[in-house]
Image 1: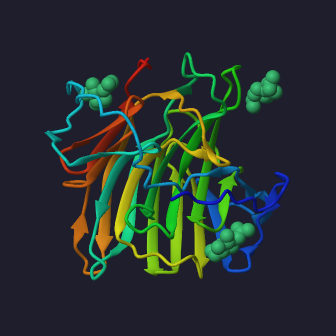
Image 2 (image 1 turned 120 degrees about the vertical axis):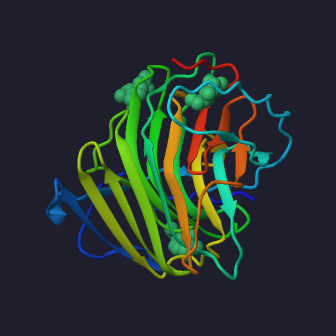
Length: 300
Ligand SMILES: *[C@@H]1O[C@H](CO)[C@@H](O)[C@H](O)[C@H]1NC(C)=O
Ligand SMILES: *[C@@H]1O[C@H](CO)[C@@H](O)[C@H](O)[C@H]1NC(C)=O
Ligand SMILES: *[C@@H]1O[C@H](CO)[C@@H](O)[C@H](O)[C@H]1NC(C)=O
């Protein structure tokens, strides 16, 4: 299925953060932020509706066979590469752990380094974008997805890269946090803690620049909380897929999800979505997922 492209405001006028926001009739949220541990005044917290629908999944239509697994040669102390089940997608590259409805995800966590993105040579599809996020649902549960992360976007052949932080509760509100800094190589930590199927707190920290944003949402679209996701996505732009840029490897570290029972799961055994010819996802030692570019692009 394909989510409808949602335009919250027709123009990209910054929405000044005030204590309570009403994204539409059904979704309100509050947002607070700190910089080096000190509160950021609400007047300096800036959000903009974003134009990507990042929420597509289930695109298991005609795609070529996945490329054979690249040889694992990683110098860092990831202990072992695991042979997780794989599946193909045309827009999700990463790991999805599916849990039972009777013991669903309460909190999900992940850390990653925002990649360095560059124009994919030979591609004339613009914009090109890659979104890195941690989220709940959107795979086997297709009617809602709560997610937060970063995105790099290249509008045209100039190769100028924009890096942004964003969050979205599909099919409802979708925002870029324009006041939050993001540079290539910055480490981010994302935690999404649900308190029910329709309420959650998202915490996004740029660890490198010591900015933390906390978004508290009540009455969101109903989650089943059965999918724990760590994903690099080739987003949709309107109803068509954006181009997919080249980017440095994205490692999701400390990828864990705590279940309602208190048990903790990670990416061990999780399904690894691959975008054939464009992106490969591998799992290492239970808590690390790596996602990198394959196919016609080369890593630099
Ligand atoms: C993907 O990243 C892993 C870990 O860094 C590396 O072993 C592998 O060779 C990379 N694959 C490609 C195609 O670059
Ligand atoms: C290309 O994209 C950049 C960055 O968004 C923008 O500043 C520039 O105006 C665009 N150029 C053209 C020709 O569209
Ligand atoms: C408002 O939220 C509802 C429920 O989450 C959603 O179905 C609808 O598409 C949203 N509308 C807009 C304009 O975002």
